[in-house]
Length: 257
Image (cartoon, rainbow, N blue to C red):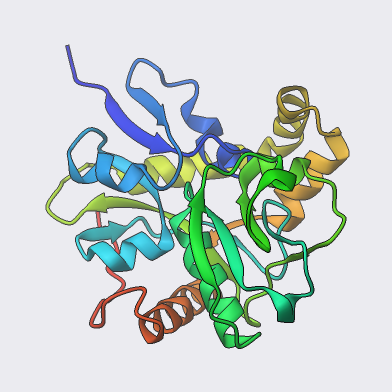
């Protein structure tokens, strides 16, 4: 029996358009759902063959190749990545970081340092959406949980004039997965074409309204990795290097299979 291709993916609404076209291929593909911070180790250890990985982890590892043309990204604020602050921004001294997202943790540090000139103390937390119990001035929350919290007293991420890339598909540099570029591109196209159907199913799963899900999937999140996204990807890396959050000397390498 031919071994099924194991694909690592996050369990959030923002990834559903990327895997919609894969759900009908269970004989050939196994989807492995995990929080983004755990997927890189699973890829490194050979537990999965290809994975959505946090953009910061691509630069930290140095051993991955990017699947071209696909990302989870945004331009401006995004509903599923938020900092909730109990104090005015200038008074933030402690921040609890949702440890399930490596990229959003790095982005929080960059924004608070570069835009607000703050260097607070950071602590990890589990990212449940009961933020009232968090023992910190502010808390980072990601994914569907971030969308469930009432929008009182928070500020959302803004980055630069460029799109911000949260995650990309990646394979290990020394691996060979024939046809993976085309497979994932066709899956993305199928998901985007079926986004209204996805909004209905995600509304049932999350208890958000269909309108909220459709707005999120079509306006908040972007799925291409074009020239502007690559510029934003590279800009994020340079900022991460400046704060010691990623090593110098990395390049963006694309998979060609």
